[in-house]
Length: 292
Image (cartoon, rainbow, N blue to C red; front, top):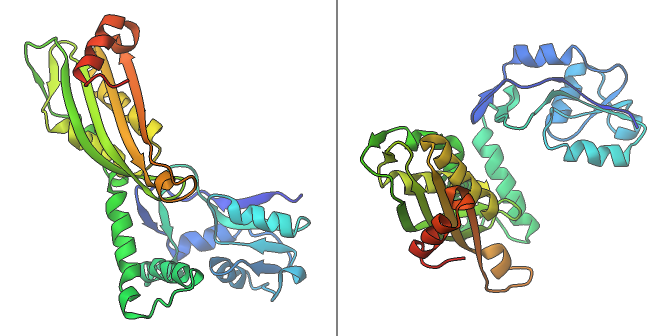
């Protein structure tokens, strides 16, 4: 099977990065020889830039797209046309942000909203009817809000610390949170209980722990990973003697679809003395409300 190739890694970005024409032309310099067919939509523009575009993939030597990100498109065309090379001028790496190509820079928001309109049409709806006209805009705004933690640094909430004569457990119970399951993009929500034993009398303000939980929850998540991320962030920032986190969550991906079962999921993370010392762990669990 021909190898998938990409000319450039995109620049390191936090959320979105505009790719100038100069960068695009530089990446195009390594385009393979031969007739080219472009994957709609961005790949068609890339094919046109080569000056060797053809109308059908069967007539092409190379199938192109504008970027290889998840690899799903490349895999699909590898399966459909196993003897043809798949190429893109850019390849995304884990952690790279959203790239905006020159031909997208005037209508990026409109293009994303059009994706929502196509989903509505796929469901058999008419996105032009009154109740749905503003739905694409609302969906994008809601997703941006629900994933706002991706654009925040969780360590910033723990940067301000205090020294107090305190070496006993600090516990915050019943912190509400809401997150999006990364598997179905459906919400899960519940409460978090977070406790720690200070080291060298270093503590953080009470409100910082709920803010940390909210920041890490407002991402595409699994409850298991969220639990451990909260614990690790607190341990790293404070160097605490012990950190314990218990999350309970109701998952709509289970209650609204699939098995449609009502079930509360509980996850925990115990670090430091809460993991190694049974007496410290028992005290934490008792103060947390006997959760197991």
